[in-house]
Amino acid sequence: MNDDYSPPPDHARDGPRDEPPSLEENLKSRATWLRLFFMLVLILLYGVSRVVLGAVVLIQFLWLLLKGEVNEPLRELGQSLAIYTYQIISYLTFNTEERPYPFDQAWPSSEGLDLRTDD
Image 1: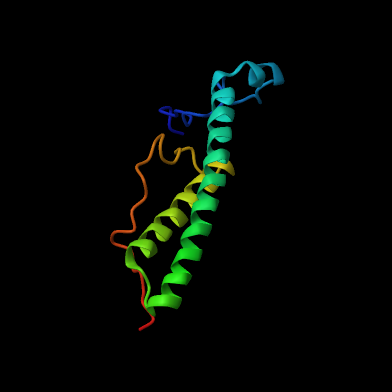
Image 2: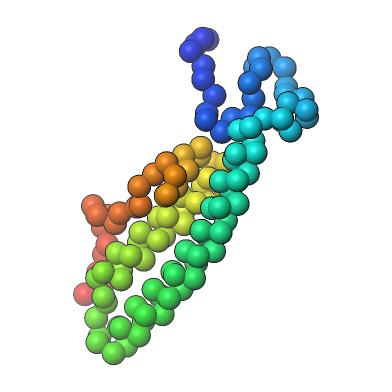
C-alpha cells in the first residue's frame, strides 16, 4: 500500500483512514463547509448558464431561419457552455474535486473539438 496518500482538497476527513469519521468531525470540518459554499455558488452559475444557453439556442435557430446557415461563433459558444455545464454537474455530483471556472479551471474552449457540419 502506498503511504503517500493525500486526500483530495475538499475531502472532509483529517483523521486515520481505518475508522469512519464521526458526525462531529464532519460538522467541524472546514473543507466540508467550504465545499458547500462552492456548491451553492456553482448552482447559481448553473442557473445562469442555462439561461444563456437557452438564448444561444434561440438566436442560433433564428439565425438559421433567416440566413440559412449556422452562426459559427454561436456554435462555439454553445459548445463551451455545454462543456461548462458538464463540469459544474460533475463537481456538484461529487464526480470530481476540480472546481470549474472561475475557481480551478479556465473557461472551456471548443478549440480542437470536432464541431461537425451537416452540409
